[in-house]
Image (cartoon, rainbow, N blue to C red; front, side):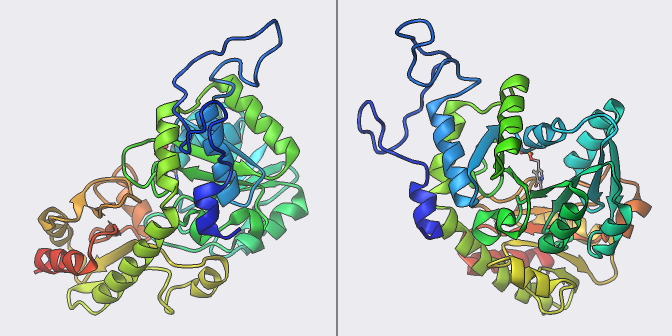
Amino acid sequence: MKFGTKAIHAGLEPDSATGAIMTPIYQTSTYVQDGIGNHKGYEYSRTGNPTRNALEANLAGIENGKYGACFGSGLAAIDCVIKMLNPGDEVISTNDLYGGSYRIFKTIFEKYGIKFHFVDMLDTQNIANAVNANTKLIWVETPTNPMMNIIDIKAVSVIAKSVGAMLGVDNTFATPYLQNPLDLGADIVMHSVTKYLGGHSDVVMGALICNDDQIADEMYRIQNSSGAVTAPMDSFLVLRGIKTLHVRIQRHCENGEKIARWLNSHPKVDTVYWPGFESHTNHEVAKLQMRGFGGMISFTLKGNHIEDAKQIVKSTHLFALAESLGGVESLIGHPATMTHASIPKEEREKSGVVDSLIRLSVGIEDVDDLIADLEKAMG
Ligand SMILES: *Cc1c(COP(=O)(O)O)cnc(C)c1O
């Protein structure tokens, strides 16, 4: 089955009780049993709920995995992955990481005796140099936020396998439509479903997808034991969102390309970060592991003045000033004062987050209107 068909059909059957073509919202916490131990596969909704399970099967289908699990947020999904580890285990992660992932690693799990190393994964040799007998997880995010760096998943998976470590990939930015890490050697894929999979900025949710039976056992045991599960209503909304994922991402990619090229020729713009450009550092890797380059773009201004950037982000009308990304509507943000404000200036500038850096989540509106909006705001 091809992607668009899977998005609409994978894991989904008409409702067995009524024939409803859309998976009903099973808004129930418990299920009546015919006798002790004699039930219809459901006992309690933390453990299993038909609406959530349908979404989990659908997510597994579109990510080319066997098993899916949904969580209350992307970070709750990451929380589950780290809980598979033991005290003394070590994790190697990219240094250009989503801030919330960095925070949960450092402020929650370090005190339980898990050690985190952050390396520049653009050069995979840095990972090979950092692994040791205690390395149990390598954590990759690609493309990264907000610099759009591309990390070679296949090359990292070779290193992970050589030391028997699990490879986890945060696939939030690419989505399963553009990139399938399990096919590239990853053991577990994570999504902030909040972003493109939900796609309508109305749900906070996370997901994990894997193929390995043992990893799946652990994943479901922790999902049920820690209990950070998703609600039936939210599961329904995301099932509805995924039905148009392929159509939305196609438009995100088209609009993204047009805006990246327009910005590139704008006299006030210094550098545009978008993996579709041949000049992008890892464009060749992006071409190999992705089927398109998405609608996330960052750019800097000539002169690198913070006031110029602040003026632009507050002057757009269609591009709303907000955190988050991946919805049908376009967003604009200023990482230095928003998502990356807590990182010291010197630190953030090392990874490219300079004062004039602006990040766009290009939506699926008419691209001519989006360009006109930016043109006016940039003066
Ligand atoms: C938003 C995001 C997360 C965290 O997901 P939540 O749903 O906000 O908990 C993790 N990784 C990336 C790349 C994200 O963009």
